Amino acid sequence: MKSRLHGVLNRFSRGSKNSRLDQVMFRNIKTVDANANGTSGYLLKKGKNSGKILKHIKKETGNI
Image (cartoon, helix red, strand yellow):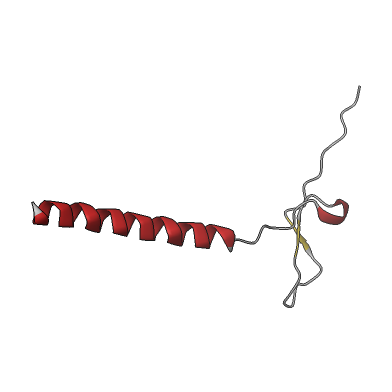
């Protein structure tokens, strides 16, 4: 009986440890600053290409 409960408790503790780690990792995610300052791309903040916008999306105006 002890070995069966030992295995159950081990699995539970491993699962709770993994879920706590997932929660901590999820809280530390920094979101990308998309659509900031009127742009629909991502503005590079550091490096030699700082100030450039990546993947700028332009919508073509349709003729009515």
